[in-house]
Image (tube, rainbow, N blue to C red; front, side):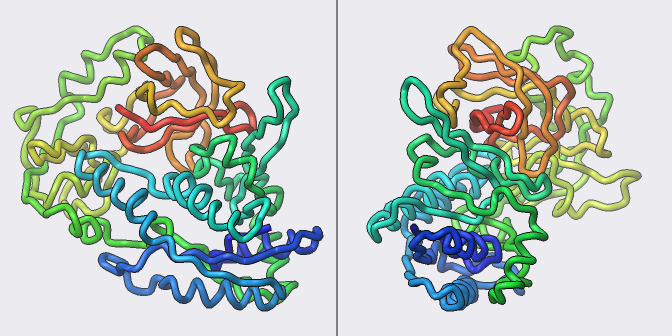
Length: 388
């Protein structure tokens, strides 16, 4: 049994619990990033993480190994990030990291060490169900609603889930901290990591300027009375309702300048550096071709909200293939379009043009490049990259 020791409290307690259950546990730390460009000061670098991971392994008296996966991480996660931002989309590197690195490249490294399973400190659960086609693995939300991380695993396959274990998924975060303190683990009081998976907290424009050049452009404010909002279709046709709002500079007024449209994302408030308005301004659209940012005033601005989104056919992913919705049919699910968002009710309609999610209530900040995940009760059934 290999546990991915990250240097945090969650993976530390996962290793402890597995050893208590009688598993032959091996700790494996992966280094995925070397470059500190754009990394904010005060963030713990990777070598601190490795030190804490080693201390935990020593305390638990388990073997400790190190593997450098920075090459695959750059190719599969960071290069994809740059490509998506260049297109004016906002990727989720944490979801990609789990699909491409932790449960792919890292999993293969663990198997080389003779492991039957890989365990992580994710707050989620797995359930095996016998079917006529053999075992099926269900990905379930963590018992701690405040820490549930199933969304970050929304792209895992059955083959990946088969080899995965989530030892702390049934626990609440305070319980995990308590166990770590009782066992005198070095990570007991260490703060949770933040920012990009394995990179940390970054100044995003500075980080992206490794590949994307800064370009001065206009910030255009769109009034809430823009005619396009009143022209929305009255029907519940998700194909029509999923179409993004299309603005031109003539639809509003210039209020500032920016340093590159690809550095901004829908719903963003911080980083605009525009003051003197009655209410805060939010990004409601970006145009990387014209290099224009469109903003709206106030959190209730209609440009922030849409009732539907679209997922391309090739981006539809079923964690549990037995629950797949056939083209030409629909099914109600609960949805999440970003981490920590409360589940939203709606309908998934699948056609030969992909999947359309029609929400019961308009959703704030539907962002191309992010992942939409759908749940049936506690089970995360499927997911897909938002096209529009």
